[in-house]
Amino acid sequence: MSLQIYQRIAEFGKKLALLNDLETVLPIISEEIKAIVNAERCSIFILDRSNSMLWTKLSDGIGRIAIGMDSGIVGDTAQTKKGQIVNNPYEDDRFLAKIDQKSGFVTRNILTIPIFNSRQEVIGVIQLLNKYHGDFNEADEGIVSFFANYVSGTLELALFMEKNSQ
Image (cartoon, rainbow, N blue to C red):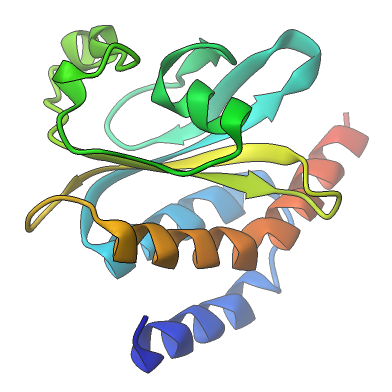
């Protein structure tokens, strides 16, 4: 990873430190990571353990998405606690093509990375779609993993604040 990317993420962290609510935090995280890895779309899935679901408050170009924890590439990422690079999604049995069919979007490639809390439990998954130039690769996976670790504390705090304000 280049020094420029580390510096960009550090500068981003300064902005993020001032925020603590999901409605504000999620779009900012999404826009920043899309710009860093040059991806068309980003969804941030939040894990709801009590209902064994993953859901988005934020999905570029589509309404809220809710899937079972055992569904799709995102579900596999949450369960295995490992990032996934899928550069031929329509050939992958885990791919939920019905979401593309419903939205009219065509997914060319996918990168998913788990987001961990301070106890190293998965609290969410970052999903990036359609890298603009070529396929996702291990360098992208490393950058997004680093980014996920960097934003995890802010996300954990925002989830805590939302839960305790209800």
